[in-house]
Amino acid sequence: MAVQKTHSEGTGLNNFWMPFTANRQYKATPRLLVKAQGMYYTDVEGNSVLDSTAGLWCCNAGHSRQEITEAVSRQISELDYAPTFQMGHPLPFELAERLADMAPGDLNHVFFTNSGSESGDTALKIALAYQRARGHSNRTMFIGRELGYHGTGFGGISVGGMVNNRKAFNSQLLPSVAHLPHTLDIERNAFSKGLPEHGIEKADYLEHLIAQHGAENIAAVMVEPMSGSGGVVLPPVGYLKRLREITAKHDILLIFDEVITAFGRVGDAFAAQRWGVVPDMITTAKALTNGAIPMGAVIVSEKIYDACMQAPEDTIELFHGYTYSGHPVAAAAALATMDIYRDDKLFERSREMEMEWQDAVHSLADLPNVIDVRNTGLIAGIQFAPSEEGVGKRGYDVFTQCFYDGLLVRASGDIIAMSPPLIIESKHIDQIVSTLEKAIRNAI
Ligand SMILES: Cc1ncc(COP(=O)(O)O)c(C=O)c1O
Image (cartoon, rainbow, N blue to C red; front, side):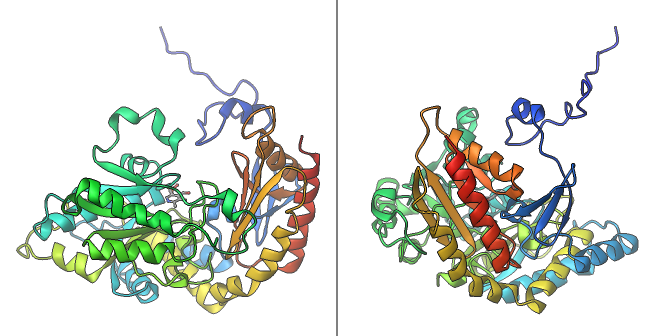
């Protein structure tokens, strides 16, 4: 008998199993975006929707930039694809040089991936390869952090600390991982403007983990300088520097996951620069191509690269890579994106707008059920007390109400997260605040 194929039962939406989505709920009341330009999406009914999330922390230069479209079209008609296994083409070399110039310290070598998740897993593998190459094969343990998000590969969910992302896969996570406590502390830090004052001592817990497991067994500590998916969890003042001091003291690698913080989000090319810490590796993706084409990159220090280059010259140094590592079309998109960031001075612009952004989002602090407003760079989180109808209900209601009123925000449980394109202007900030105010007042 022929296998019955199910199609969309009239909605046209049935066959796509959507990621991180309540599929049945969404498909009952879909929200479809069909166009984007600058700060705005257009939905399927022709309504304009202001984007306060840069897509998903991707489109830092605003949507549908002509320069990127042209670079991509040119590249795809000239060289659509070429392998980078024992072969090459010019663009990823050019892009790697460009990223190395932008990166802090001696982070000079770039391994290309296709996503933030792949960047996370790649960085973890490079950490193991480095430890082995320098004769520290015992150093295999990773230290992550509660509420950390490093994508959805097995490495990322193991080192990450998002409980829902781990639960169903718990039996097959990486075997040797410990977690630092997260740094969200509403009791002490509620309504902080910029980085919260309290919590540097949470970095000292690393000393405790090291004492417990032995520095000689630990390969790397991996954290987001600022965690978005965990609910806009900011690093307390001095916290990242303390992590750097402790990792350096014990000869443990420090990996910053900058998949959302790189490329101007906090007013510098990398959060590492804004917050004055040089890690050993930085992972990126998303705004690397302004979201236009999938691409990620891991930027690696000289010390790591050199250690891995000690084998005989005809040896493959790292048995790792992706068919699309350094894809020519993605690299063309990334180079065009870097040109826009430089020519439009978008990192500087991000810094110029951050005080206005801060004042605007904190003007929502006294609304009903708001228990915290937090911000840094062009990022904000607004947290609600959970409603009696359940955790996440209030966040979801605010998110949907905003959407129907022409504003895209992101809900993560009862936290609204915003990370607008860096081209944001005062009029957009006004629209964000007035739409949110109405939605928060209406939410039950
Ligand atoms: C900090 C961080 N790391 C990794 C990822 C995963 O990126 P991707 O969805 O491209 O795999 C994300 C995605 O939001 C992220 O925020």
